[in-house]
Image (tube, rainbow, N blue to C red):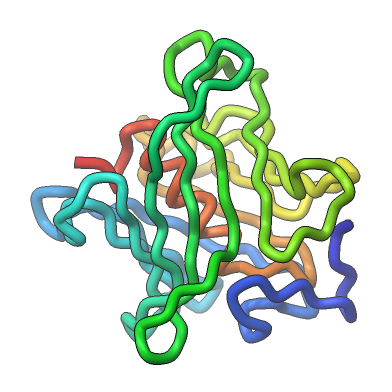
Length: 209
């Protein structure tokens, strides 16, 4: 169920749930300069999040989402493969950093492997902890991330976040290094960008070595 403006849905923290729709800008960092990953800014160009990939973390299949001050919010790891419907999936799990080094599970996402599984029309399903849907998943990703044309929907089919490129930027840039993400009211922005970090890695972009 999508969150309304007065019905926040904190998965990482309530402070990342806005009462109004947010438009945030993502800029990929070059591997040769900053070890890859990407930076997320708001309309005032203030850094809200940044993501470190394996070029910074030093471990493949591991990502860290940090806040604007550089403090870690999410540790995201890729687990072993699972065979399902003739496709081999690797599961990603996102954890918050708790006190005394403890980690709390926030979400899991199955990564399809192979060209036949990564078809553009193939939705990627996300489960959160605790569960909010009576289905075996809570959110799904539809569209094609490499073209910056995809959305995160809840189990009822309502769009909670949308990834795109402004037309004027698209005309000026042949690469997809700069794009925007629209996050609906009440949705945890840290969760959204944790999911986007996984998509970036799956498609071999800035977070991958």
